[in-house]
Length: 79
Image 1 (cartoon, rainbow, N blue to C red):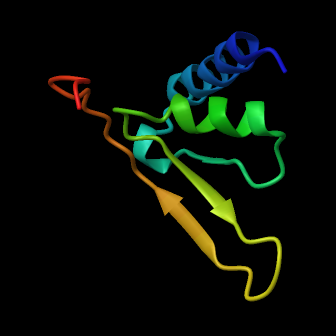
Image 2 (cartoon, helix red, strand yellow):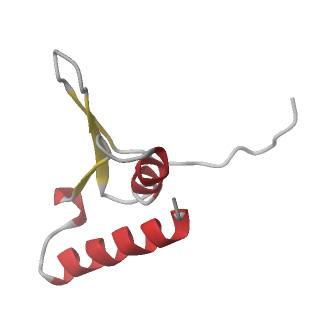
């Protein structure tokens, strides 16, 4: 449940993979089986990078959904 610790761990793992020659675009974080905090952390570290995250449906037809998310903050939060 420690969001920051999860993010740190996943970032460290990605950096280790990159040091071994794996490109960001070849890294996918699967958030299917994680608790909500782990899934949110996994998705959040992929923002504005070449790393993608994916979710596999846990019921038939077991489709895989992969996301390459680019986040842009809004110009204003006013209604």
